[in-house]
Amino acid sequence: QTDNFLNTIGGDGKGNGDGNILLWKRKAEQYLIDSGVKYTIVHPGGLLDKPEGERTLLVDVDDNLLSTQTRSVPRGDVAAVVVGCLGLAA
Image (tube, rainbow, N blue to C red; front, side, top):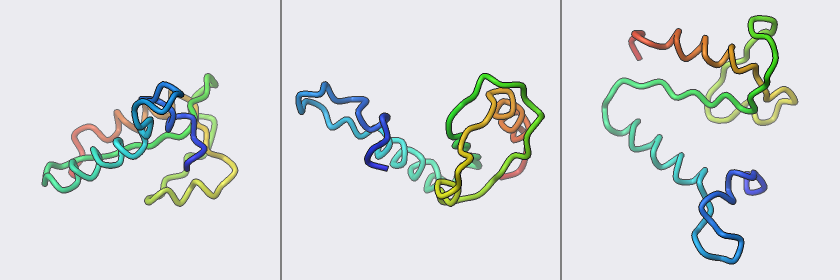
């Protein structure tokens, strides 16, 4: 997503710095994947300050959910998913 505001982080608006933090995050994730270490990667989308546990959470891979309209999730739900991943075999 070239229009994502995260892609501006790392640049100063004057062309200094590449500002493509999402590319570097993907490279770091690929490094982790290639390392052989057991892992879980969570991309929660937009975080909401709303009560947790009141929504059906959607899970998918390869950014398939980017084509859906609901891409935000309460922070507490993200925390529950991350804690739930702890200790699980990847």
